[in-house]
Amino acid sequence: MNELASDPAQLPVDVAVLPVAEVAQMLGIPVSRVHQMVRDGQLLSVRRDGAVWVPSDFFTDRAPVKGLSGTIVLLRDGGYGDSEILRWLFADDSSLPGCPITALRAGRHREVKRRAQAMAF
Image (cartoon, rainbow, N blue to C red; front, side, top):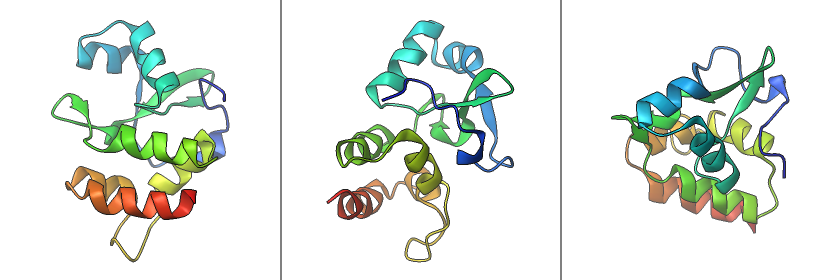
């Protein structure tokens, strides 16, 4: 699996993103650790205009959103690629309501993981 996503169409352009260096500064870790978090499935990244970015919705209170990494790992284990996972996290889901990342940010990580698990199997 590719460490850094490279398909710019995988994420709507209106989704706010942060450069990897800013993510590292916010989390108080080296940039290399942010890349490791992407490889490990704790975060996902996109490449835009030659630079690597992470969606800002992946963070609350200067930490990754609770349940995000588990959801990513669950979907990766189910055969989904990072591009597909990103699209799914930001796609509207009338049963939540809203999109999965919004539900995760609202603390409904169990609900999101149940849907991800159903998709993965």
